[in-house]
Image 1: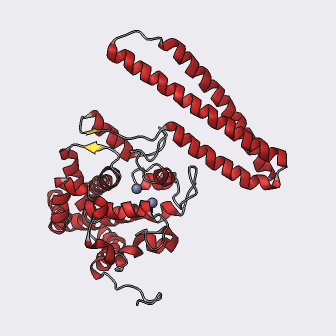
Image 2: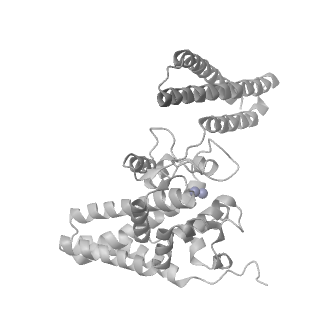
Image 3: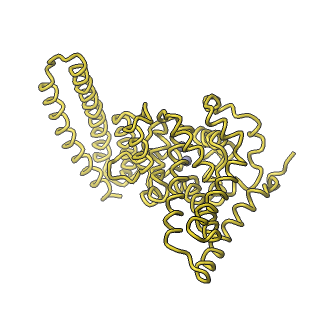
Length: 379
Ligand SMILES: [Zn+2]
Ligand SMILES: [Zn+2]
């Protein structure tokens, strides 16, 4: 039997790829830039390539394949399969299998492949440099659905030659066109790969450590706008872990989620459909529950009456929320029906009712906030 202190063997291929590319990116690239010079065009192509590979992971590997939050046309799937090879993060099948385990067993040190409870290093990169997962990789039974996708299987079968071809071929070709093959390899090849790697890895490490938990504290996932900026919108990870079937991670219009925008744009172009969203009622309810939980923790120092008022207010707000979203749904359904059947249904009265409910809900929310502030002052 393996002793606890005994670590599984090192995976040399991964270790060498991660360390050599990292050293070249932080030493080789600046040295080359200083001694030979690197033209502006290389940086722009690097940025474009990084966005292509990064978005293929977030919109393709993550939201399309791992979570099935929408359906995509074969053209888009093929593009993501190529971008996933550029990102060098294993095949979509393998990646999705790991990721589904992560969601199913989040924070379980034995079952979550990159459990954040094992620390920053482990969840960021450590999990990939030793044979921690060896026993799991004999079959892919948690991604049976993806095995029916010929593009996924084609990419999985030819992943190694594909990733070598794109990771060398494209930087060399771009470098050749821009007049410096070495600069192409260094900037568009290596530096870009390192950036793609570590920004994606941040979602497993930092997005489980740094940020807020507005929706749930049942797992370590956090919402973080800075990380969202670096990860094409995946930084809203607290939301994502509780509503993983939603194609959005940043649900507000002002939240930076270019992956969501790309999916919506694909829908407009007729290349994606069946975009799944969580019910707004469930989302608001989750948020409210967290607010109550926090208030109750703080309310211990506050007078008993305040504590009771918070519970009462929460119940009332919850009921109002439910009624409002039900009425809103009824309004939307009636509107669709009226449009479809070309009949004049009495929408105005319904609309007035919904507007009134909304106004009263806003008022309730304001007094809920005031109550939370009052509790805060006692804490
Ligand atoms: Zn996920
Ligand atoms: Zn996570």
